[in-house]
Length: 241
Image (tube, rainbow, N blue to C red; front, side):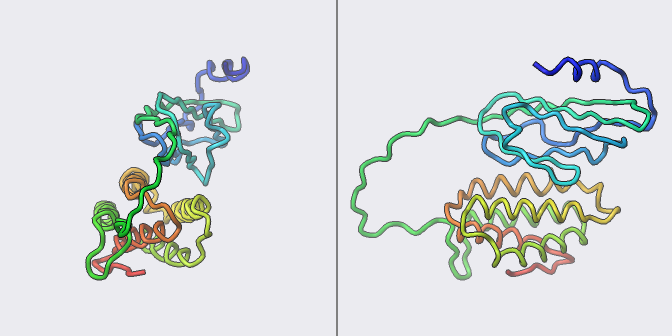
């Protein structure tokens, strides 16, 4: 139950004309995938997120965005309170319906001899990239072509290329470094680029196709990132990290 003082605050209507509590983000998500919410369209001197109690320790923020991964299906409600210097407030709620199946861990089967194990499906092969990597590249390229934001595209490409050799050897840490780099790029966007919906058009689809590829090591994750970078084309020029 929310504290009484929060209830009383939310019960007061916004009086100022310069206040706007607006939350941008998906209304549905798959369990275990990274989700982003943004208050970039909100106006006010102070802005405070209201995050479900069970997600507070698993969320992080960068600029106007918060991001988190929800492991359990269900409906989760997020709130935003904005206030001005006259102590007037406005608020908004945003619900995300998380779908998917939670699979209970099962004991691994007894190992059987495999003389010639099949190659990892996401390992690159010269001149013929695996379908999963090609899907990542095409998803990145299609989003960039839709957004038509050359400045942000170039910034993402150069930042991710520079990050590749510096990625930590621990997979969760490597993913965290990539998330921080991307959010930093989004925070550095030029004013003309800030209305481009990079979150829903590029970021969320990229997270999904990388999740589908299911990289298990940092090297496999790097191959996924290289596919993302190859899709960050500007005026037909595509980087080849």
